[in-house]
Structure formats: C-alpha cells, structure tokens
Image 1: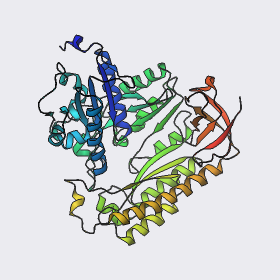
Image 2: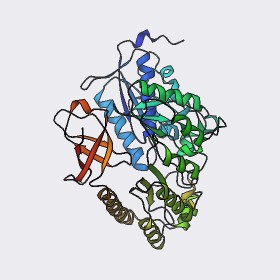
Image 3: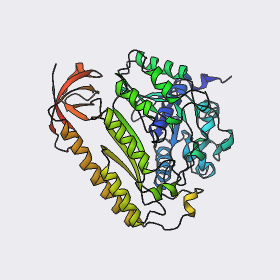
Length: 439
C-alpha cells in the first residue's frame, strides 16, 4: 500500500509527444496522480514532479523527446523527473543517462507510475524499469478529454504487423485490447462529463478483439447505443481491416461520422511489398470506392510515407499518380526516418534528404488541392457543426459531421453545442469555411 500523504499538495507538469494515444494515456496518468493528492502545476509555478510521455516514430521524434526533457529539467529545478512512452521503452539506458532524469518506465509500467515516485528524492543516476517485449501484456485503459468537447477513447494497444520500417511493435508490444463492456462504460462516463464527441484511438484499432474474442464491428455497434454521445469518429484504421460491414454500418449510423483515416503509406505496389504491408493498391482503391459509394460526402484522410528505402524515382511517380487518382480529402505526409533494428535497413537504394523534401512538397501540394476542392463542394450547404470553446472575442470553430472546419462569430452559449450553420467561402488562410449561424 502506497502512503500518499507525502504527495499532498505536490505539483506536477506533464509533457506529451507523439500520437493521440499518448495524449490519452497521459490523461490517465494525470488522473492517477490527482487521486494521490498531486495537482497539476499552474502556469509559472515550479513543479515537484515532471512526467514526460515520449514518442519514437522517427529520429526527429527522439530528438524532440531529449529536448523536452532538458527543457523541463531547466524550468523545474529539483523536480523528480519520470519518463515513459515509446522512446523510453526502446532506449531506456540512453534516457536514464540524461541529466536530471530519475526514473524511466516502460509500456508495462505506465499504469503503476505512482509506485516509482517513492519519496520524490532525486536519484544520483537515472533508474530504468522496463519489461521485455514478450512480457508487455496488460492493457492500460484511458479516456482523455482533449477539450471540453472531444474525448479520446483508447480501445486497443500494440501491433502484430511488424512492417519493415516501424518500431511500434517493439515499443508497445503485441496487439491487445479492453473489453467492449469496459469501453462502453468509459464512453458512458464521458457523456456524463459533458462530452459530445469521442474519437476511437489505438495503435491498430481494426485488430480489436485479439485478447477478448470480440470484434471491432461488435465494438462500434455497442458504442453506437451509448446515450449522450452525439458523435463517434474512427481514427486511423488499416485498409485490410476496414471491412465492408463496418463501412455500411457507419453509412447508416446517426452517431458514427462519415470520416475515415486510412494509412496507405505508398501508392506503389513494389514499395508496399518492401514495407511488408498487408494489402496492395487495388485493395486500397476498392475501400475508397466503397466508402464514396455509400457516403459520397465522406472525408477520407490518408497517411503517406515518402523516401523509404527502395523508393526509386519511378516508384514514387507511380505512387504519386495513384494517390492523385483517389477520391480522398487530405494527405498526412511523413518523410521516412531510419529506425535502428528495423528490417528496412537491409533494403538497398537510399533516398537523399533533398529528394525526400522534394517528394513531400509535391504530395503536400496535392493534399492542399484535394482538401480545397472538397471544401468548395460544400459551400452554400447547411450542416450541423459541433462548436468548441474559444476565448472571448475570438472566432469559434467546429467541425461538420464530415470534418470540414468551420468558423463562426463568438457566442458563449454555443460552447459544446451542435448548431446548424450555412457554409460560406474560405477564410483568409483557406484553412476553414466561414459560417453563418442559423439559430
């Protein structure tokens, strides 16, 4: 039993890098510390505890993690520093050697973070507590409030895919998940707290059910019955796991939004083989066609990686033309980063940084064209928009069911409300449509 009396009135700061899943987990860590009497430090206050939840998807991410740790150590002298997350799991010894770090904990220890705080006395050298990959088995539940409107519900963790370029399976372990009953309860509690929208998050959410014998389709049907939640969105889901029954169900649901995010990674079949992805371009194109067939106005976001080992100029041109042909809305473009221990390092043909940048810019320009064209099609329509909190005097913004960002004049009574808005022209930055309130 932990004596939490020593933590009363202690202050903590939290710093999260990486994906929405990390932010969701940091929220859960914060709740655990709050229950022990540790409050979140206010702006300008010196904290007693610093918690850093790290990412390691690229070398740049690793660098940002180190910079964040150095910055927090400097801003909060004498604070007890605890580091967790993917970078901590993959490089525990390197993280433990960073000046000021006291404890490094891995994926399996995240939920037990309180056990590693001790009496908050600084350590002479950082201590690492990391479980071996084969021992990472627990599912740490989390449902975080991104803001007053949107919650992020973690439904799954880990991955069994082992793509050639990716370290996530080494950082997060095998695919595992919570039960449908437990996730429905978390969604119900989010509704009680006033949440209107929940985003389903995970590492490979379409793989849901590995540890409970349930299915992702069963999960969305159960969540669809939760009273009080107006909107659900499905975050990134692998194309080979996005079944037609899921697509058809979303098309007929009042709560699941016509909004999909599907990782393509490359539009070249040869590069997909090198990546060890589990689909080809024909399957991906068929999923996009199916979605547009039953939900013509749906928003489809697509992940693309450029400059992977083996991506010749010819393969990139094939990929570019394929992506250009797709009826999708937005591209999330990432430059390939070498990750130690991955199979991709055995592939010949290395793309130069300059060429990666050039290819990225071409795809980003294509993305802008597709997004603007999608927005333009909806000018003049009236759609329900879930408005989000904004500072007094600032424009409020929110999203339509199909994820079009809309700006409207500020009104305090509209925070966290769904209202009908007539969509007008683009704002000056062309990042949103200007709306007219119809209430």
